[in-house]
Image (cartoon, rainbow, N blue to C red; front, side, top):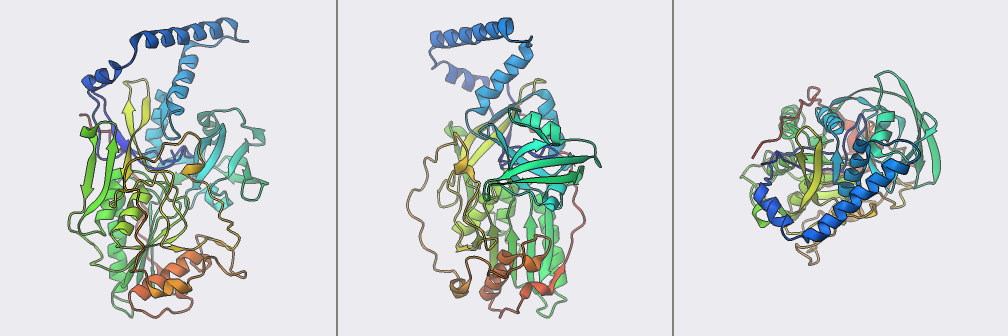
Length: 487
């Protein structure tokens, strides 16, 4: 017997919403779990103790079925047990019923009905990982870290994450009200929205002077190809600019919850000519892997600034970590989420699937960012009232420990441009309210333009961003994910 498997990265499922840190994603490289290996592990257990515990499980089921206030089916009890068995291992492992697995596969297709939220169960509550660009949730102003407490003015306290998500789903065009508690301020806020079919545009691009700006929103199918297309369009547009060429690149990974490992590797490979990109290490040494760059750099060595924040997770952190360790880019913004684990999706026949943490990943310098995140080279807050509060991996309960890897202090960089010393750590008091759709309000982006221009030896116009010309790639609707390979 062999299981079909796929490696997963990220911080949240999409569920018309989305669920969980870790945009739940199939990954190109797959692990293999032969029966012999499973039998080998089980053989080390105390069989008598295992039988005793399984008997206990059966006894508790019998008591519940006989005495609970109303009848409960074996299916519900067993599904509850499976939820607890897997879900309590760490925040990113979970059991999915057949219906949940089907929903996840639909969501991975990138076109689904809902609000455009990525959410995570946290201590019995539903917490927002990030809203998706251009969706009802993002337009309404729901933020990373918000706790959803009510749907249509009815409490969701006590519901499972899946039950809460199902309440938030509905037909496109129907109205919905979400009530959230915002921990940063302690305020309770209510947002009235209309559900819609969410088309995830995973690549957005613009030309700022002679700087290519590329925003990646998720690491999903064909992301690298879409990014390459966007870069080529910007390159052609820049040839018509006064500079007659591109002089730098800004790669925006803010609030990108992750996705497919193969896409993170491919994107990194587009900017790094040689050396390690990432490695993964799991329980069984034979499943450890390392990926190296293959001698390509689509920019031909142009200076790069990578924008990050607390919503940049997993696959985003692989890219940021690789570019930082290779001194290929300057990281500007805020510390990343800190999810340094890899999940494997293991379908269980027609009974659903298990999403299981099977490895940790390590940056080229051998560091695990699990629970730590990647610290920016130039720290810049998003807003003037940012008090440093964040929602990251370290805030989750029963997280995976950070073990192995390089534990030495990072070597200070000597290649950061001198202008970094004059970059403010936060916007001034009179800075306009931040709106991602209005580049002139994006303080982090403005500072990134200054830095990348300085790296290219260009004096900065003021304000640089007003010279932006948006160069849109065709709308990218993700195709349904192919089935995971069988090994």
